[in-house]
Amino acid sequence: MSVGWRGLKPGPSRREVLARCDVLSCCEGFSNGRTEWVTLNIIFRRLLWAQALDRRSRLLFYDGQMPANALPPEPPAQEWNSHRYAENARFVSDLGQAAFDLLNPQAGERILDLGCGDGALTEKITAAGAEVLGVDASADMVAAAKQRGIDARVMDAYSLNFNSEFDAVFSNAAMHWMKRDPDAVVPGVRRALKPGGRFAAEMGGHGCVAAITVALCATLEKYGVADPASLIPWYFPTADDYCERLERTGFQVEYIALIPRPTPLPTGMRGWLETFAIPFTNSVAEEGRAAFLDAVTERLRPALCDEKGRWTADYMRLRFLARVAG
Ligand SMILES: C[S@@+](CC[C@H](N)C(=O)[O-])C[C@H]1O[C@@H](n2cnc3c(N)ncnc32)[C@H](O)[C@@H]1O
Image 1 (cartoon, rainbow, N blue to C red):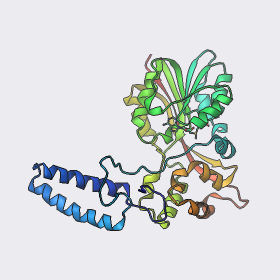
Image 2 (cartoon, helix red, strand yellow):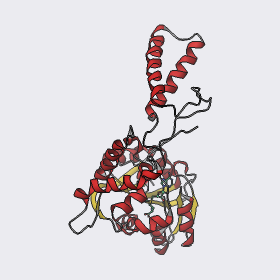
Image 3 (spheres, rainbow, N blue to C red):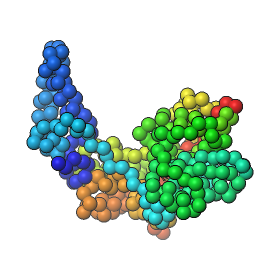
Image 4 (cartoon, rainbow, N blue to C red):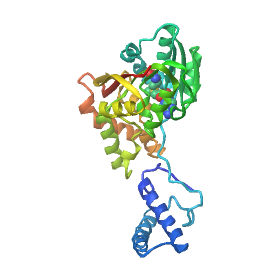
Protein backbone atom coordinates (compact mmCIF):
# COMPACT_ATOMS: atom_id res chain seq x y z
CA MET A 1 0.00 0.00 0.00
CA SER A 2 1.38 3.38 -0.85
CA VAL A 3 0.84 6.00 1.81
CA GLY A 4 2.61 9.29 1.61
CA TRP A 5 3.24 12.75 0.36
CA ARG A 6 5.32 11.91 -2.66
CA GLY A 7 4.16 12.23 -6.22
CA LEU A 8 2.91 15.01 -8.42
CA LYS A 9 -0.66 13.97 -7.63
CA PRO A 10 -0.63 13.64 -3.85
CA GLY A 11 -3.14 11.77 -1.73
CA PRO A 12 -5.47 13.43 0.77
CA SER A 13 -4.04 16.13 2.99
CA ARG A 14 -3.42 15.38 6.68
CA ARG A 15 -6.53 17.38 7.57
CA GLU A 16 -8.65 15.31 5.20
CA VAL A 17 -7.25 12.06 6.50
CA LEU A 18 -7.92 13.11 10.09
CA ALA A 19 -11.49 13.99 9.10
CA ARG A 20 -11.85 10.56 7.56
CA CYS A 21 -10.61 8.89 10.76
CA ASP A 22 -13.05 11.07 12.69
CA VAL A 23 -15.90 9.72 10.53
CA LEU A 24 -14.87 6.15 11.26
CA SER A 25 -14.65 6.74 15.01
CA CYS A 26 -18.10 8.40 14.96
CA CYS A 27 -19.49 5.28 13.23
CA GLU A 28 -17.98 3.14 15.95
CA GLY A 29 -19.77 5.23 18.59
CA PHE A 30 -23.04 4.77 16.65
CA SER A 31 -22.77 0.99 16.55
CA ASN A 32 -22.39 1.08 20.36
CA GLY A 33 -25.79 2.77 20.53
CA ARG A 34 -24.43 5.93 22.21
CA THR A 35 -24.95 8.39 19.39
CA GLU A 36 -27.65 11.03 19.50
CA TRP A 37 -29.56 12.64 16.65
CA VAL A 38 -27.25 15.63 16.42
CA THR A 39 -24.27 13.36 16.02
CA LEU A 40 -26.17 11.31 13.43
CA ASN A 41 -26.63 14.40 11.37
CA ILE A 42 -22.92 15.20 11.57
CA ILE A 43 -22.04 11.61 10.67
CA PHE A 44 -24.29 11.69 7.62
CA ARG A 45 -22.77 14.90 6.30
CA ARG A 46 -19.24 13.67 7.00
CA LEU A 47 -19.94 10.35 5.28
CA LEU A 48 -20.89 12.24 2.15
CA TRP A 49 -17.62 14.13 2.44
CA ALA A 50 -15.68 10.92 3.04
CA GLN A 51 -17.23 9.40 -0.10
CA ALA A 52 -16.02 12.39 -2.07
CA LEU A 53 -12.53 11.88 -0.61
CA ASP A 54 -12.65 8.20 -1.55
CA ARG A 55 -13.32 9.13 -5.14
CA ARG A 56 -10.45 11.64 -5.08
CA SER A 57 -7.83 9.32 -3.78
CA ARG A 58 -7.41 5.66 -2.96
CA LEU A 59 -3.94 6.06 -1.53
CA LEU A 60 -4.67 5.58 2.13
CA PHE A 61 -7.10 2.71 2.43
CA TYR A 62 -6.34 -0.76 1.21
CA ASP A 63 -9.43 -2.33 -0.47
CA GLY A 64 -11.55 0.45 1.00
CA GLN A 65 -10.80 -0.73 4.57
CA MET A 66 -8.73 1.26 7.04
CA PRO A 67 -6.25 -1.03 8.80
CA ALA A 68 -6.85 -1.06 12.56
CA ASN A 69 -3.50 0.61 13.28
CA ALA A 70 -3.45 3.07 10.35
CA LEU A 71 -2.11 6.53 11.22
CA PRO A 72 -2.31 9.66 9.11
CA PRO A 73 0.88 9.95 7.04
CA GLU A 74 3.62 12.15 8.43
CA PRO A 75 5.06 14.81 6.13
CA PRO A 76 8.58 14.09 4.90
CA ALA A 77 11.17 14.89 7.56
CA GLN A 78 14.32 16.96 7.32
CA GLU A 79 17.39 14.78 6.82
CA TRP A 80 20.83 15.83 8.06
CA ASN A 81 23.99 14.91 6.21
CA SER A 82 27.26 16.16 7.69
CA HIS A 83 29.07 16.30 4.32
CA ARG A 84 26.32 18.30 2.63
CA TYR A 85 26.17 20.54 5.72
CA ALA A 86 29.91 21.19 5.65
CA GLU A 87 29.79 22.00 1.94
CA ASN A 88 26.70 24.26 1.86
CA ALA A 89 26.13 25.48 5.40
CA ARG A 90 29.49 26.16 7.07
CA PHE A 91 28.30 29.77 7.36
CA VAL A 92 25.83 28.67 10.08
CA SER A 93 28.51 28.02 12.69
CA ASP A 94 30.83 30.68 11.23
CA LEU A 95 28.11 33.24 12.00
CA GLY A 96 27.63 31.92 15.54
CA GLN A 97 30.03 34.42 17.14
CA ALA A 98 27.26 36.64 18.56
CA ALA A 99 25.63 33.66 20.30
CA PHE A 100 29.04 32.50 21.48
CA ASP A 101 29.71 35.97 22.96
CA LEU A 102 26.35 35.85 24.73
CA LEU A 103 27.32 32.48 26.24
CA ASN A 104 30.72 33.85 27.31
CA PRO A 105 32.06 30.40 28.31
CA GLN A 106 34.47 30.23 31.22
CA ALA A 107 37.24 27.74 31.89
CA GLY A 108 36.06 24.85 34.03
CA GLU A 109 32.35 25.36 33.35
CA ARG A 110 30.23 22.40 32.27
CA ILE A 111 28.19 23.34 29.19
CA LEU A 112 25.57 21.53 27.10
CA ASP A 113 25.44 22.33 23.37
CA LEU A 114 21.87 21.55 22.25
CA GLY A 115 21.60 20.59 18.56
CA CYS A 116 25.39 20.67 18.27
CA GLY A 117 25.40 19.47 14.65
CA ASP A 118 28.91 18.60 13.45
CA GLY A 119 30.40 20.33 16.48
CA ALA A 120 32.18 23.33 14.92
CA LEU A 121 30.92 25.68 17.65
CA THR A 122 31.12 23.00 20.34
CA GLU A 123 34.82 22.80 19.55
CA LYS A 124 35.14 26.54 20.00
CA ILE A 125 33.45 26.40 23.43
CA THR A 126 35.80 23.57 24.42
CA ALA A 127 38.76 25.70 23.32
CA ALA A 128 37.63 28.34 25.84
CA GLY A 129 38.40 25.78 28.58
CA ALA A 130 34.86 24.55 29.29
CA GLU A 131 33.89 20.91 29.54
CA VAL A 132 31.25 20.52 26.81
CA LEU A 133 28.72 17.83 25.95
CA GLY A 134 27.08 18.08 22.53
CA VAL A 135 23.69 16.48 21.87
CA ASP A 136 21.94 16.20 18.54
CA ALA A 137 19.14 14.08 17.08
CA SER A 138 21.13 13.20 13.96
CA ALA A 139 23.50 10.23 14.26
CA ASP A 140 25.43 11.44 11.21
CA MET A 141 26.01 14.90 12.71
CA VAL A 142 27.01 13.38 16.06
CA ALA A 143 29.51 11.10 14.28
CA ALA A 144 31.03 14.17 12.60
CA ALA A 145 31.24 15.96 15.98
CA LYS A 146 32.95 12.93 17.53
CA GLN A 147 35.53 13.01 14.75
CA ARG A 148 36.54 16.42 16.08
CA GLY A 149 37.15 14.74 19.45
CA ILE A 150 33.97 16.16 20.98
CA ASP A 151 31.98 14.34 23.63
CA ALA A 152 28.71 14.08 21.70
CA ARG A 153 25.57 11.96 22.03
CA VAL A 154 22.53 11.25 19.91
CA MET A 155 19.64 12.70 21.89
CA ASP A 156 16.30 14.23 21.05
CA ALA A 157 15.84 17.72 22.49
CA TYR A 158 12.25 16.84 23.39
CA SER A 159 13.48 14.29 25.91
CA LEU A 160 16.58 15.71 27.57
CA ASN A 161 17.34 13.68 30.67
CA PHE A 162 19.78 15.83 32.65
CA ASN A 163 19.27 17.10 36.18
CA SER A 164 21.08 20.19 37.54
CA GLU A 165 24.28 19.20 35.73
CA PHE A 166 25.27 22.21 33.63
CA ASP A 167 26.41 25.77 34.28
CA ALA A 168 25.05 26.78 30.89
CA VAL A 169 23.10 25.45 27.93
CA PHE A 170 24.03 26.79 24.50
CA SER A 171 22.23 26.37 21.20
CA ASN A 172 22.89 27.80 17.75
CA ALA A 173 20.56 27.50 14.75
CA ALA A 174 18.89 24.37 16.09
CA MET A 175 15.80 25.28 18.11
CA HIS A 176 13.70 26.48 15.17
CA TRP A 177 13.89 22.87 13.91
CA MET A 178 12.15 21.74 17.12
CA LYS A 179 8.72 22.69 15.91
CA ARG A 180 6.75 19.65 17.05
CA ASP A 181 6.63 20.77 20.68
CA PRO A 182 8.73 23.81 21.63
CA ASP A 183 7.22 23.72 25.11
CA ALA A 184 8.80 20.34 25.72
CA VAL A 185 12.29 21.64 24.94
CA VAL A 186 12.55 24.61 27.33
CA PRO A 187 11.65 22.66 30.52
CA GLY A 188 14.28 20.04 29.61
CA VAL A 189 16.87 22.81 29.34
CA ARG A 190 15.69 24.27 32.65
CA ARG A 191 16.05 20.89 34.40
CA ALA A 192 19.53 20.42 32.94
CA LEU A 193 20.80 23.66 34.52
CA LYS A 194 22.25 24.12 37.98
CA PRO A 195 20.69 26.88 40.13
CA GLY A 196 21.80 30.20 38.64
CA GLY A 197 22.64 28.49 35.32
CA ARG A 198 22.19 30.31 32.02
CA PHE A 199 20.66 29.54 28.65
CA ALA A 200 22.28 31.36 25.71
CA ALA A 201 20.91 30.68 22.28
CA GLU A 202 20.27 31.86 18.77
CA MET A 203 17.61 30.46 16.46
CA GLY A 204 15.56 31.55 13.49
CA GLY A 205 12.99 34.16 14.51
CA HIS A 206 9.72 35.50 13.19
CA GLY A 207 9.95 36.26 9.45
CA CYS A 208 13.09 34.17 8.89
CA VAL A 209 13.47 32.92 5.30
CA ALA A 210 10.01 34.33 4.53
CA ALA A 211 10.65 34.82 0.81
CA ILE A 212 12.16 31.34 0.49
CA THR A 213 9.21 29.76 2.33
CA VAL A 214 6.66 31.51 0.11
CA ALA A 215 8.54 30.46 -3.04
CA LEU A 216 8.69 26.82 -1.85
CA CYS A 217 4.97 26.73 -1.01
CA ALA A 218 3.86 28.55 -4.17
CA THR A 219 5.92 26.22 -6.36
CA LEU A 220 4.60 23.12 -4.58
CA GLU A 221 1.04 24.35 -5.17
CA LYS A 222 1.84 24.41 -8.88
CA TYR A 223 2.99 20.81 -8.50
CA GLY A 224 -0.44 19.93 -7.11
CA VAL A 225 0.52 19.58 -3.44
CA ALA A 226 -2.65 20.49 -1.55
CA ASP A 227 -1.41 22.00 1.72
CA PRO A 228 2.27 22.95 1.28
CA ALA A 229 2.31 25.13 4.41
CA SER A 230 1.89 21.94 6.47
CA LEU A 231 5.35 20.92 5.26
CA ILE A 232 7.11 23.96 6.79
CA PRO A 233 9.55 22.32 9.22
CA TRP A 234 10.53 25.52 11.07
CA TYR A 235 9.18 27.29 14.10
CA PHE A 236 10.15 30.97 13.98
CA PRO A 237 8.80 32.67 17.12
CA THR A 238 8.58 36.36 17.88
CA ALA A 239 10.63 37.75 20.78
CA ASP A 240 7.44 38.18 22.84
CA ASP A 241 6.34 34.59 22.25
CA TYR A 242 9.70 33.13 23.19
CA CYS A 243 10.17 35.43 26.16
CA GLU A 244 6.83 34.20 27.56
CA ARG A 245 7.79 30.57 27.03
CA LEU A 246 11.08 31.10 28.88
CA GLU A 247 9.45 32.97 31.75
CA ARG A 248 6.65 30.39 32.08
CA THR A 249 9.37 27.80 32.60
CA GLY A 250 11.06 29.76 35.38
CA PHE A 251 13.76 31.65 33.46
CA GLN A 252 14.57 35.31 33.96
CA VAL A 253 15.17 36.74 30.51
CA GLU A 254 18.16 39.10 30.60
CA TYR A 255 18.27 39.78 26.87
CA ILE A 256 16.15 38.85 23.88
CA ALA A 257 16.09 40.43 20.42
CA LEU A 258 14.93 39.72 16.89
CA ILE A 259 17.74 40.66 14.52
CA PRO A 260 17.55 40.84 10.70
CA ARG A 261 20.66 39.18 9.31
CA PRO A 262 20.78 38.99 5.51
CA THR A 263 23.03 35.97 5.00
CA PRO A 264 25.26 35.43 1.94
CA LEU A 265 25.00 31.88 0.62
CA PRO A 266 28.42 30.59 -0.51
CA THR A 267 26.91 27.80 -2.64
CA GLY A 268 23.91 29.79 -3.80
CA MET A 269 20.21 29.18 -3.37
CA ARG A 270 20.48 25.68 -4.81
CA GLY A 271 22.95 24.64 -2.11
CA TRP A 272 20.69 26.10 0.58
CA LEU A 273 17.58 24.35 -0.75
CA GLU A 274 19.40 21.03 -1.07
CA THR A 275 20.53 21.28 2.54
CA PHE A 276 17.58 22.78 4.38
CA ALA A 277 14.43 22.34 2.28
CA ILE A 278 14.31 18.55 2.19
CA PRO A 279 10.74 18.19 3.54
CA PHE A 280 9.50 20.25 0.58
CA THR A 281 11.69 18.57 -2.04
CA ASN A 282 10.85 15.06 -0.87
CA SER A 283 7.15 15.72 -1.30
CA VAL A 284 7.80 15.74 -5.06
CA ALA A 285 8.38 12.51 -6.98
CA GLU A 286 12.11 11.79 -7.26
CA GLU A 287 12.28 12.34 -11.02
CA GLY A 288 10.72 15.80 -10.63
CA ARG A 289 12.94 17.12 -7.84
CA ALA A 290 15.68 18.80 -9.90
CA ALA A 291 13.07 20.69 -11.93
CA PHE A 292 11.26 21.64 -8.72
CA LEU A 293 14.47 23.10 -7.24
CA ASP A 294 15.17 24.97 -10.49
CA ALA A 295 11.65 26.43 -10.39
CA VAL A 296 12.01 27.61 -6.77
CA THR A 297 15.43 29.11 -7.52
CA GLU A 298 14.14 31.03 -10.54
CA ARG A 299 11.17 32.33 -8.53
CA LEU A 300 13.61 33.69 -5.92
CA ARG A 301 16.20 35.11 -8.32
CA PRO A 302 14.65 38.59 -8.67
CA ALA A 303 14.40 38.99 -4.87
CA LEU A 304 17.53 37.34 -3.45
CA CYS A 305 20.18 37.25 -6.20
CA ASP A 306 22.21 40.35 -7.03
CA GLU A 307 23.54 41.59 -10.37
CA LYS A 308 26.74 39.57 -9.89
CA GLY A 309 24.88 36.31 -9.25
CA ARG A 310 25.47 36.35 -5.47
CA TRP A 311 22.66 34.95 -3.33
CA THR A 312 21.59 36.28 0.06
CA ALA A 313 19.02 34.54 2.28
CA ASP A 314 16.50 36.63 4.23
CA TYR A 315 17.47 35.44 7.72
CA MET A 316 16.00 36.78 10.97
CA ARG A 317 17.68 35.65 14.17
CA LEU A 318 16.20 35.42 17.63
CA ARG A 319 18.98 35.71 20.19
CA PHE A 320 18.55 35.48 23.94
CA LEU A 321 20.20 35.04 27.31
CA ALA A 322 18.07 33.73 30.17
CA ARG A 323 18.95 32.61 33.68
CA VAL A 324 17.51 30.27 36.28
CA ALA A 325 16.98 31.97 39.64
CA GLY A 326 20.01 31.14 41.84
C1 LIG B 1 21.38 23.97 11.34
S1 LIG B 1 22.01 22.70 12.33
C2 LIG B 1 22.96 23.63 13.51
C3 LIG B 1 24.12 22.83 14.05
C4 LIG B 1 25.10 23.58 14.94
N1 LIG B 1 24.49 24.05 16.15
C5 LIG B 1 25.77 24.71 14.18
O1 LIG B 1 25.71 25.87 14.65
O2 LIG B 1 26.39 24.44 13.15
C6 LIG B 1 20.61 22.17 13.25
C7 LIG B 1 20.87 20.92 14.08
O3 LIG B 1 19.75 20.73 14.94
C8 LIG B 1 19.58 19.34 15.10
N2 LIG B 1 18.22 19.05 15.57
C9 LIG B 1 17.06 19.30 14.94
N3 LIG B 1 16.03 18.84 15.66
C10 LIG B 1 16.55 18.31 16.80
C11 LIG B 1 16.00 17.68 17.94
N4 LIG B 1 14.68 17.50 18.07
N5 LIG B 1 16.83 17.27 18.91
C12 LIG B 1 18.17 17.44 18.80
N6 LIG B 1 18.75 18.00 17.73
C13 LIG B 1 17.96 18.45 16.74
C14 LIG B 1 19.85 18.78 13.73
O4 LIG B 1 20.11 17.40 13.76
C15 LIG B 1 21.01 19.65 13.26
O5 LIG B 1 22.25 19.04 13.52
